[in-house]
Image 1 (cartoon, rainbow, N blue to C red):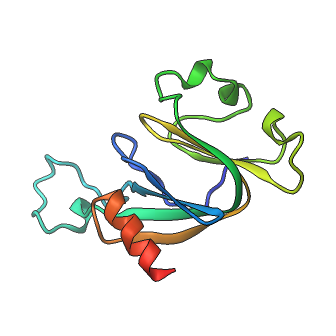
Image 2 (cartoon, one colour):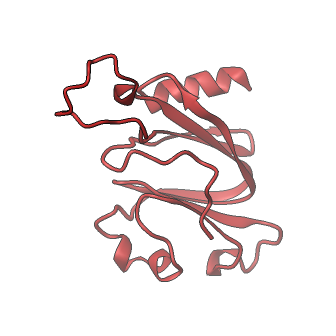
Length: 147
């Protein structure tokens, strides 16, 4: 059920942005930097742990999507939580009530800090694991010009 391909999101403020493109949907977000040493570490400002970057994922052959509630504060009350969806992660469900009438699709879920993205689609992939920008909007522009 966990979808482990996307880079780990920044849990505080990943600021996800989405962009519809024909029958696909792009989603960009700020990543958690695994080299982050802490603001009070004494590391120099050019330490690689202070770099901000984004990732872009694409959902292919999208049938429908929802972007908004629940936030992390409401997730525990949502039916997705009862299906095993947790905080600040990426998931792929092959069985859920939303998929009963749609053959060959999965329910992809990304639980960000302030919103959740739910996509019913045939596939999903990481377009770019590391775009050297600090804004998801800029990452979407970068990804949409590459494709």
